[in-house]
Image (cartoon, rainbow, N blue to C red; front, side):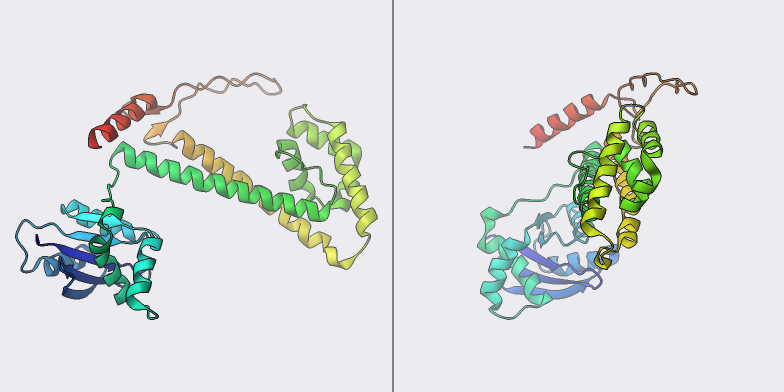
Length: 317
């Protein structure tokens, strides 16, 4: 049986990490606690390799606990060791078998250290992205998070409006005109009626660049009339309080969508979107100029960067 050193690390969020180091036969080498500092992790490395062959690589097993896994992975992979990042479900089954009813950080760390022994085929070495691949990975994750956040605000916004206006005009996507109405009135039925058809029409027409007008305004007014007919002055509605939440949700949704769009375009660096100067004159309705291709700071076209990444992945596999 070839010598191995298996390192299970139960990651702490606000506390120290708990470490168990095992040999290839499952016997224990040492128990330690560490922090995400270079000197602390070097102590763990030295303790784990004590008495081992000089060219032995550690097998480090961690769970993806929030952001705490990244410093551990960066340190040990950078030192030439193998790192496995396992799912919580993988560790949970073995933990239940080993510990029965008990649960502690030490048991969790030992469970992780044993996984390469009991389920070697279920582990895959972690490969950290580098360079453009790492940047692309972060942008994709940020875009996904902001897109989900924008969708959450959209659902919340529609739910609030449906409470205030049961026959809500918001049946599909939220356009600029509807958002302008919500930001101005909060979907409060009395505020909608107080604006009147003429003022509401001007607001909608201006927000939609003339695409919508009196018809859409009347839809909002009809919904306001029907809401007051149904609710009357019932105190459970708390119109003012519910309506006060709507403009906040509108602004939150705009920020989320703006952030998602900015992340997709890459922000200012390393990817930059270059456009020509604005040509819209005051009061003139001109077509927005087409954007030029997205450029990296090389400047290499983004399509070429993606092709290079695909080639690297194919070479590694």
